[in-house]
Image (cartoon, rainbow, N blue to C red; front, top):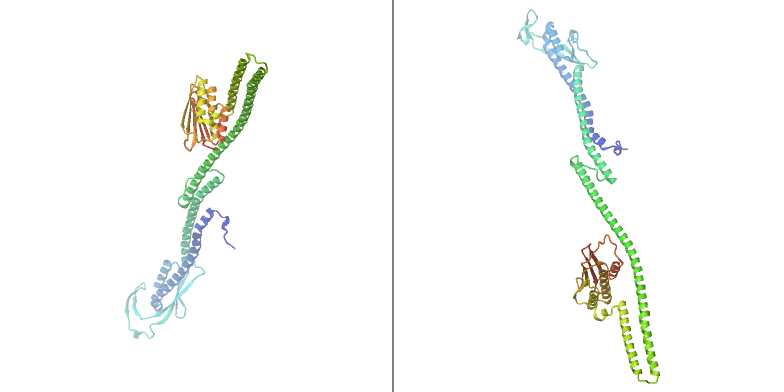
Length: 496
């Protein structure tokens, strides 16, 4: 089982705990050890001091015990009690343990008292003379033969009673002072740990808020590197990532908008193309029906009438030939025959006209260049207010039949539009084959009134031209401005 569960701890608590744990452990270890060590030191110092004082007093008490003069011992003992507060009492006994002298101090004694004893030995006797105040004045070494006893005979004992309470009290004060200092250091460490943890958690909190904002697609949240080291690098990296994501989002939105506009334009173009195709189909059908009607009228009114006249003329010739041969019959037959020839020529011209309207035979016989040249000359002759011109470059023999007839119809439609709408005074047809990429290049220019393609809806003629070019896999470009003329550029493949 884990003692500490870190999963629910925040960074602030973890950093504070990690920073304070060594200090607290050191405080908990040092204070008891200091108390224990100082207790041992006090015991050792008390023991050494008690033995030393007992020994010193014993050495200086030989004369007093032998002579019975204990006055100076009392003064010495009182001085020792005043100087050393750890000494509670000093007592001198003889060799039979009878009290000779006892002096107690004024300091309170505790339960933990120590008693130190030292024997008073009789060593070499020193002769002394005392003054009136019983102070030794002179001393001289006496012969050892004067003393029957041995020098090391014990003549009494010195008993020093000492208590460690005062020494321990001073040590406790010192330990308390050290503990206070350690406590202050602990508080300072706590403050430093908290400030360090806050210095860590505040930038991390800002970083986390910025990451959450990025998660909510809020890339404009400013994140300034407010820390140094790895956290500062992390903040800088997140700020750069947010900036990159915002730029990518902008680019993506721009692409989506552009794609949406393209799709809308394509949809509108498709719808417009659909409408234009419907109009074109309707117009083509109308033109076809109108052309059929005109052809039918021409056949009924002209071709059939001429055929009837030819039939009547032939019947008249037969009738004349059936009569007796008068002198005037050959002359009338001649006239009727000439009438038949004239009507036949008219029928031929009418047939050629109908064939030309259906398909220009000059394209099949002489080629596209000659056919376009004849058409341009016809327009120039029929419309004197506008001069028409052809400029052809290259050899047009390699063109396919479908491309040639399509080019002829496109030029025909363009010249027809110039006559109907441009009010031009000059028009020029340029043809180049082969041009770049082996294509037929056609350009029709005029100096007419022009038009704005963005504001004016394209007519059926232009729509038909665009559909015809698109069906052949070519390109059509119409350039025009109001009062600046019109230029139609067409590129068609050589063959299908």
